[in-house]
Image 1: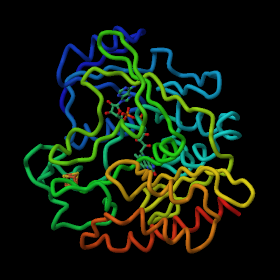
Image 2: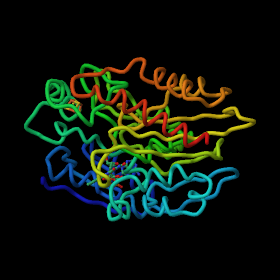
Image 3: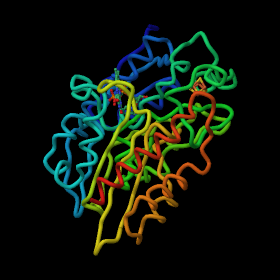
Image 4: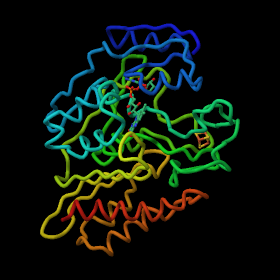
Length: 325
Ligand SMILES: Cc1cc2nc3c(=O)[nH]c(=O)nc-3n(C[C@H](O)[C@H](O)[C@H](O)COP(=O)(O)OP(=O)(O)OC[C@H]3O[C@@H](n4cnc5c(N)ncnc54)[C@H](O)[C@@H]3O)c2cc1C
Ligand code: SF4
C-alpha cells in the first residue's frame, strides 16, 4: 500500500476543503471496500478524509419519509424499526448483502459508491478501462459470470454490486449531496449513476469534492415489498440476479409497481416500461412473463452470460408472484 495522509474533520466544510486540496483525495466511510482496493493497488488516494465524525449517523423522520445519514451503518439501517415496518424491502436487501461483521462497518454512502466486483478490475496486471481509462477490457474475451447484460458498452460490462441500492431504486430514493461551496442538492437515484459508455471510470454524476450527506426515502407507494437474490453461495456472495419489488394492489389489479434489479445492469436497474406494463393489470403468469420480455428486450448476452436471461425471467416471476399473492 502506498503512503497516504489521513484527516478526521468534525464538520462537513472541513471535509469538503480537505477533498478539494488534492485531486487524489478520497472520502472514507467504513473502509470495507476502499481499503481492500488500496491494498490491491487498484486505488491509491494520497489523502483519506474520514466522514465518520460529521454528524451524519442518524435516521431522521421527515414529514412523510426518512433521511438516512451517510454514515448510518448497514446493520443499524436494516434493524431500524421504521425501516423494517414501512420499507422492509430495504431491510431485506441489506441483510442479503455481505456478512454481519461487514454490515456493522459499512455505511450508507459507501455502499452506494462501492466499486464493481469484476475480477479484472481488481487485478492490476490486466487491462481495465474502468481502472485505467483507455487500457482495454480484459473481461471481454475473458470469463464472464458476475457481469452485466443491461446498460453495457464495448468498453465495460461490469455489474453494479450493491443490494441496498437496488431496493433504494425501487423506493425512489434521493441522494443528498453537499458540494465544495456548501450548497446542498438532491439527486434521484435513477439519475445518480451513469452507464459506462466510453467513460466507464466515471460511475456517477457526483463532482470531485461532493460529499454525500444522506439518502431520503419518500413514503412508500406500495405495502407489498419483496427482495429476492440469487447467488452462487447462500451467503457472502454478490447477486447473479436480484430483484426488489414495491407494489400496491386494489380490487385484484396492480395499482402501483416499482421493480428494480441487481446483477443485471451496469447500475441498479429500473425500467419504466416494466413498471408501466404491470400498472393497472391483473396479476397473471402471462403478464409476468411479458414483463421479463420487456425488461430483457435490449439485453446483451455475451458468451458466459446467457444463463442470466432465463434466470432473470424466473426471479422476476417469483418476486411478482410473491408480491401479488
Ligand atoms: C467479502 C465481502 C462481501 C460483500 N458482499 C456484498 C453483498 O453481497 N452485497 C453488497 O451490496 N455489498 C457487499 N459487499 C460490499 C459492502 O457492502 C461494501 O464494501 C460497503 O457497503 C462499502 O461501504 P463502506 O462504508 O465501507 O465504504 P468505503 O469503503 O468507506 O467507501 C466506498 C466508496 O465510497 C466513497 N465514500 C464513502 N463515504 C462517502 C461520502 N459520505 N460521500 C462521498 N463518497 C463517499 C469512498 O470514497 C469510496 O470510494 C461485500 C464486501 C465484502 C468485503
Ligand atoms: S468489465 Fe469493466 S471493470 Fe471489468 S475489466 Fe472490463 S472495463 Fe474493467
